[in-house]
Image 1 (tube, rainbow, N blue to C red):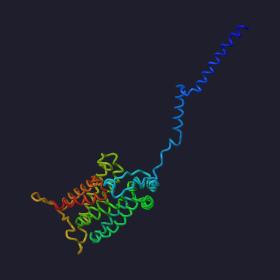
Image 2 (tube, rainbow, N blue to C red; image 1 turned 45 degrees about the vertical axis):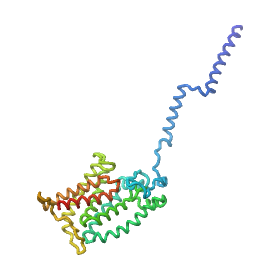
Image 3 (cartoon, helix red, strand yellow; image 1 turned 120 degrees about the horizontal axis):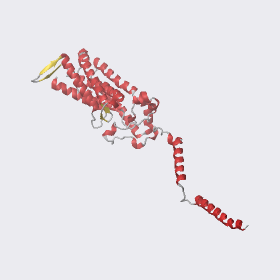
Image 4 (cartoon, one colour; image 1 turned 180 degrees about the vertical axis):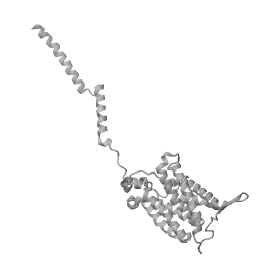
Amino acid sequence: MSSSLQSSPASSSTSLNTHNSTSTKLTDPGYCSDTSASSSDSLSRRARSRSPVHARKPPPTPLESVPDSAYLTPSSIWRNLSRSPSPFGLIPIHRQFSSLIHRHEVPRKLLHVSIGFLVLHLYRTGHQPASITPPLITALVPIASADLLRFYSPTINTLYIRCLGALMRESEVTGWNGVVWYLVGTITVLTVFPKDIAVLSILLLSWCDTAASTFGRAWGRYTPRIRRGKSVAGSLASFIVGALTAAVFFGSIVPATNTWEDDPVGAVTWAGRLALEGVGEIRGGWALGVISVLTGLCASASEAVDAWGLDDNVVIPVLSAVGVWGLLKVFG
């Protein structure tokens, strides 16, 4: 009996210590075992990985979310006129037909190529640059005005893009439409250069630029990069198409086209020969082959060069015309 009474205080003391220890774990904010902490972190990470909020990729930025500061103004620097970023998702129809319109730009390229055939038709039927440039300037004014207006109004920009989005690049959502630069380049060469050189330079813009874009997007990743957005694959395609275009134009179309009473002076600069004083001259197929290769080089170089950040639709026709005209002035 005595021994039982003596052991009771010890048991009570042990029970009290255990109770106090448990209370300390529950009430002391500084107490945390390593095991419980690591287990908590593991559960937290697992929960985040399974959470649909963390697992789901953010949706593309809607057009309405583009900040007003992203819209260009006439005071923007030259490079921003045509070299703005091209994120996917700003144009609704690009999301709907991502491969056809966004990746391969089929509607835009069809328009590009068709302009070349229209120019050939006008050339063959005797339309002169002096009669074509006024309508082009007349078209440029409202087109450029619409672009300028949408820079200041996101609502108008949204409507504009819904109507013409299939023909636009997403870089043009907050940048000048390529049609503006196409008209500027075309008007420039038709005004400054001889008739046949101007027509050829527009053909190079229409077909070489399309070939460079098509082959560059398909195989550019497998060839060295020239600069941002330009690859050896695209430049090689531009060279080949440019050489073939010059061969057909100077070899078949120019000789088969009638002369017209209202043709400007010096409308035809290609005489079927290349000569260099003191060296000699070549004629016929050899001359045609040489000028075709040189024209292909001009087209390829103008497509690849970065001329102060200007759009290709201006750079390609102007630089190509300068190159071919200069070659014919020196060797023609």
